Image 1: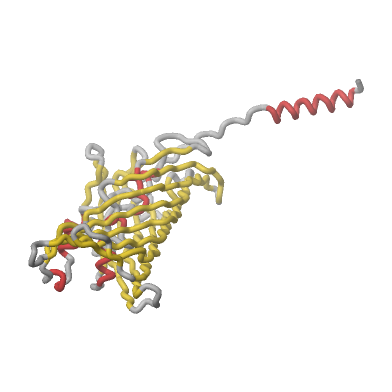
Image 2: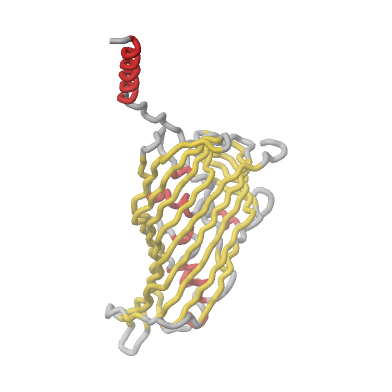
Length: 364
């Protein structure tokens, strides 16, 4: 056998051995909040609903559902923009911060009319929040697993603070430990609150007074802090799809899936308070008002491994709202139970971004 043939055979065997050798497993990644004290972040979330009327009608005393021949559509949106100054951080979370609500609000349009005919009625809604331009200080209380809150530099209604939450960083979506590319983890349904209503209830409500505004206030196409019920069911999963480099930063791309999310919110007291005068004059007794919401959606979270924080999140899916109203109507033969129900179905889109700002003067 010639020397050249031996060298070629040896090279072939080495190449075959390299190809046959098992590839090393991907190195695990640690998706963790690691933003230091003194940092300032600009955070923005925008949510849009596009809904159609699927059905409206009522039944009396448990009788058959009498559907109304109505068609219509709802377009609504709202946004929250905040500037967070991180004052302290530990154990994978900010522990003390000042949040300024720089821009909050929304709007929408209702078009409705007879089925199989052009809409003959339109209404607009304008949403605002009394917290806009205010600043709130947050302190994480480990023993309570919750945030304490107080106004930073001006007095305002203390009740406005009750529904606020310090987490505006999507921390509830992170895995419990290290994960490698291709690995998945399951999240509790409650994590959806951090995704759809980060920062809690910002009191984004209609300032307009019409039927459409009341529909949004009840929750149809409104703020998810109001929509999501106390108990949620469904399946939420996440998967680390890839890690790449962009502009000198290492970015983790996490695929999210929400399947069969379901919750029911009790809106009875709100319905009672917001009744228009003509409804208050009815000879009836309100029994209950409920909002049922379901959602199936997919999305992508981009986590900046270099900066130790979320960079963006995009989510889209299909959703359905069902409002159910129960009343006892006065009658000559005694009260009669009215059950009115409306169903709206359509799409939801969510866009969330976080950007680094220049550090405020004075550091901490």
